[in-house]
Image (cartoon, rainbow, N blue to C red):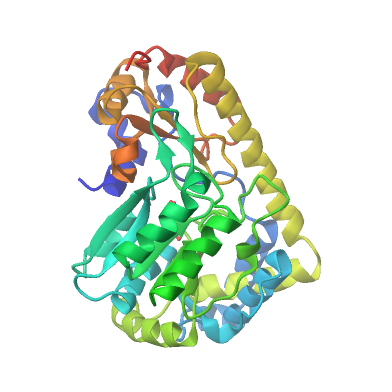
Length: 399
Ligand SMILES: Cc1ncc(COP(=O)(O)O)c(C=O)c1O
């Protein structure tokens, strides 16, 4: 089973019944999803569309394959308003069904059979299948976690990372920031160095910004403001920041050439991204920028996850007494449980009614680890502490 299928299975309410547990007794740290409210203005935008005959009719029509011009313009405004992104124009944007589909399609645009794709270890567990399902590409990994000290040490090995790029010559380097599963924001120096190295070998650096707006610091790295170039592109999603995980919409910011190639691929895979979601997002973003409610909404959501992250780290320190990554954004942290992560997860679920995601799908550095998600429990801080406490006695600290 692929790691993502396993996570989705754990998230299904019926799963607990199959192993004899009552759903209400289980505390789950497995879900990679957010639980804050979508912006009120977004709800209003949907309501305005569905209660107007003409707009409702329009939302039932096909959108252009790479997205509606008005929505692209609103996304550019949003990137400039929030991050002062430079050099970004609507023709740099491809809107898709979601960032998962876009990244999958992008691989057909960027890769030839035999090409290498460089991922940090650990990294998001869906990437390997997104990269290799259609193209016979080779995944290579660069460890960014020291398993012995349980520290995230990408910055310590920036030079080695660049040398590795020069030696291996990957066609694509794929980073997520904030990252899944470590919730670390990749430093500007790391991205800048990777960009230089990739540019020299004619490759592409991709930053997956699925968690760009859930950040626990006031000062974001400079590359958050970079527009696309020939060797740099970014993948975006409104799943997390606007709690639209099920109202699927994502976009890519890339060079015009890549946008045009993606248009060809998308015409075979999706034909048209969802029109209703684009109309609602366009209307909401324009209004929320005009009346200055977008930034406070994002700040409040980030503050809520920051609080849940703090509570998770505190509970781990108090009850488990093992090191974990201090989240800088996103929804996760990871701990080394001192035994095979999958064995740990199975035992803790059956015996303590607490669910984690086994680390194996994120890379070799996570074999003896689990990912802990505080996203679904953002307003259930007592449960975070109770779940960590219940699972604490199963950790093997001797190993
Ligand atoms: C790093 C990362 N990228 C992309 C996604 C998927 O986003 P979307 O809902 O836009 O497909 C996720 C979902 O968990 C993720 O963690």
